[in-house]
Image (cartoon, rainbow, N blue to C red; front, side, top):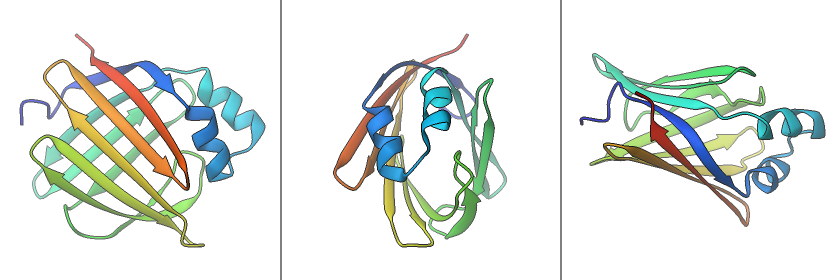
Length: 133
């Protein structure tokens, strides 16, 4: 788990606007979100894992216990329920909003890079992050 506590800065993003459209995110919020390069940090505090995504636009923090449902707020302000699982260096998050729309996030952490694959409906977005030194 040498990836815990490292910060990863986004260096590329593919299909993010379509992903946000599928979520129902408004035009102005999408434009702002497309203009930033967030940083992701994954850390552990006791039994809890913490996933922090920060940018000049907004910072979100998810605190969870693996395998247990948690309530959190998506970056666009929508309240959702998520379940996180961790297999090796792959963090999987299954998220549902109040209408039952499911979003799947798969984050694969490496020593120098993290890849995030996000799926909603028939849309897949891939974002690549590099370790910040």
